[in-house]
Each structure stands twice: as structure tokens, then as C-alpha cells.
Image (tube, rainbow, N blue to C red; front, side, top):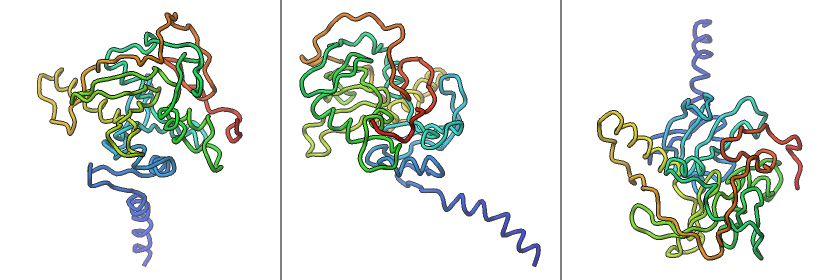
Length: 276
């Protein structure tokens, strides 16, 4: 009798861990624990896409971090932070640009507000129209209250790193995009609403580019991905982003909880549950 009870107690944690998993046959990966909670609470499949890796340790800014990759994002576990800041979205917009050899500090900047747009003096860019609507539609739930505050929007996509730009994808599609710290918003006017404004598949692009680089360094051939990693796209600023020569700021003013460039990630805002 006692032996049976001990066996049940030993198996209980494993059974609980399995029941906590949500698996996706489309990619063969599962999510669980805080990453699953964060994924489900902040948009799920329509925002993050499918998981494309297991949870694993990676070096992020020189630190070992538990991460999991999704089609559009990378989620990072930071147990040193109190919830909800113990799960953060990786800065894969900035990382993807760096992989392409593109310095976002050199992108043309308007450096003044445009009517009907949200101007970000921290980077000198406006977010307008469909891009602004989509930026405001998604965010990280921080205060448990209905609706999204601008701080919650910033926690998801971050600051704009570019104005609106025309880019040519790997399949030859010319599309209007705008880059942000943690993502890329794309216009697909051939699609009906709301699918005409989408988040780019940056998680998939970075993973495929990394696999190709590793295979090249090893002298082998990378596994054939679902979508080949695009080369650095041809980018043309839209007319609204009139170029203005601007020197690289030595220390831009950064809102609390937001990282820019290679600056260290600050801790969670002190006023963690307020608005405004």
C-alpha cells in the first residue's frame, strides 16, 4: 500500500507537466508553463504563430536565457523579474536587421510629427494609418484591465526603427513594411481585412538564416525550410519619410521598460500596474 502511494506521488509531477503542455502537430512542438500562459494571454496563434522550436537555453546579450521561438517572435523567460515581466518578447526586429547588415540608425528620419500619426522622438519616426492601427491592436497585458495602454503596446512591438518602406521579399513580392524593435508590420492589400495588415514571420526568418549559416560554416547543406530565408530586401522609403540627416544619438531617451540598440534591458517599471 505504502509503495503504491509513493509511486503515485512520484508520477504526479510528470503527469502534471504533460497535462500543462499544448502541442501543435503542424510543427511538432509544444508549449507549457509560463510561456504557454503568456502566449495564450497575449494573442495566441494569430499574433505569435506556431512554435518552431522547443524551449531551450540560448545566449541573449551575453546571458544564458531560456527561450522558445515562434513564427513571429521569440519569448524569453526572466524569472528574476516579477510577473508579468518574467516573460519578455525578444528584440528580433533589431536582430533581423542586424543579420541583414542594415543599421537602423542610418534609416531616413523625418524627426517631426505628422498629422494623424504617432511620433516617437526616441527614434525620429512616425507610425501612421494601418501601421498605427495594428501597433495599437496588440500589446502585452500588464495591468489586468480591459483595453491596451500605450505602455502595453510598447511592451509588444517596441519603438519604430524605420518609417514606412517598400521592400521586395524573397518571392519577389513588393510590399510596404515598417520595422519595430520586436517585429515588422507588413501591408498585404491583396488580402481582405483584417488579413491585409500582418506581422512578419521574423522568428521563422531568423531561424532559417541561422540554420543556413551553421550549415555553411560546417560545409554542409541546410535542411530545406518551408520558406527560404530572404536576402536583404530592397528598401525604398515612402514619400512621407523625407530624409533628414541625423547623427547617431549617443544615449537616446528611452521610456521605462524599453530597450534600444545594444543598451541593457532595464528592470520592470516601478509603477507596474498604473496607466498613463
